[in-house]
Image 1 (cartoon, rainbow, N blue to C red):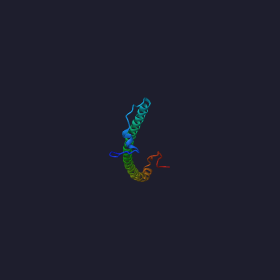
Image 2 (cartoon, helix red, strand yellow):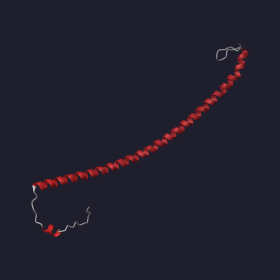
Image 3 (cartoon, rainbow, N blue to C red):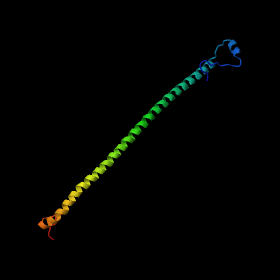
Image 4 (tube, helix red, strand yellow):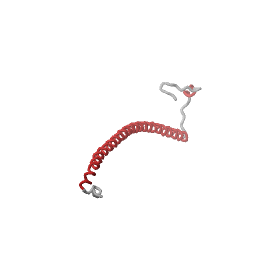
Amino acid sequence: MLRDGDHCHYADEDAIERAEPRHVRAEELRLLQALAHSTSVALESIELYSELEERVAARTRDLHSANGELAATNEALLDLQRQKEALSALLVHDIRSPAATIVLASKPRLREARCPTPNGVTGRT
C-alpha cells in the first residue's frame, strides 16, 4: 500500500510518461466504473464494520459494568436475606420461650382450680 510521499516505480516509467493520450473505449469505461463502485462499496463496508466493532466494544463494556453492579446488588440482597432469617429465628425463639414457660407454669394451677385447660380438658380426670 502506498503512503503519502511514496513513489510507485514501474520498470519503464519513461515509456508511460511518453505515452500518447488515447480515448477510452466504452467497455473499458464500464470496467473502470464497476471497479470504482466495488471499491466504494468495500470502503463503505470497512467503515461500517469499524463502527460496528466500536459499538459492540462499548456495549460489551456497558454489560460488564452492569453485570458487576448486579452481582454486588445480589450479594447485598443475599446478606439482607441471611440477616432477616437470623432475626426471624431469634424472634421466634424469644416468643416461644416465654409462652412455653407461661403454659408450663399455668397447667398445675389450672388443674388445682379445676378450670378448663386451653385444649378443653378440665383439671380433674
